[in-house]
Image 1 (tube, rainbow, N blue to C red):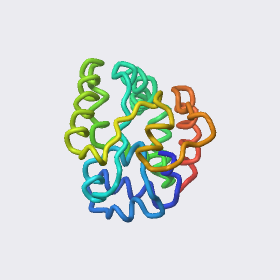
Image 2: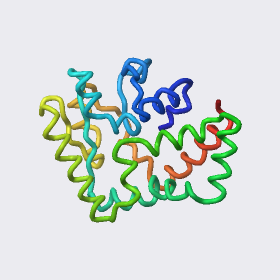
Image 3: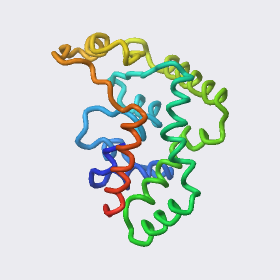
Length: 192
């Protein structure tokens, strides 16, 4: 998501989530890989367009994933109807800054748009269904089902790169996610 601050990225991905035709080469210009949202929402299309690309499916305890989603993405989404956020979005639309564009894009992303109304059990089921769909769709030689607690070794072996001499990073917990999201929103408030 932090790449949305790069010129052109937010507008291109917003067009994609609106269903407008956007070339993958436009979305991924200057990149050799993608991770996280919004690209993860289009995993199937991306894997088909880049048939030689390797796919890393990050998995974890589904209940832990639900708790994380509720404390981060879904919490932020639920605030969209609050008076302060509505005021900020109105100001962003009037000034033509990136916050309103970003909120529109994230609200339209496949899967995510349906998550806010789901119960914990339905979210667990969605996580497990997604995992099964990826495993069924991607040939085994192209796919690594990866838990971050496994560390560098399986990931580096799959990608054919050496294992770094530093510990595997443990970042992007709930506090870090929310702090990064606040910083990004502030930057988007002035970005046109």
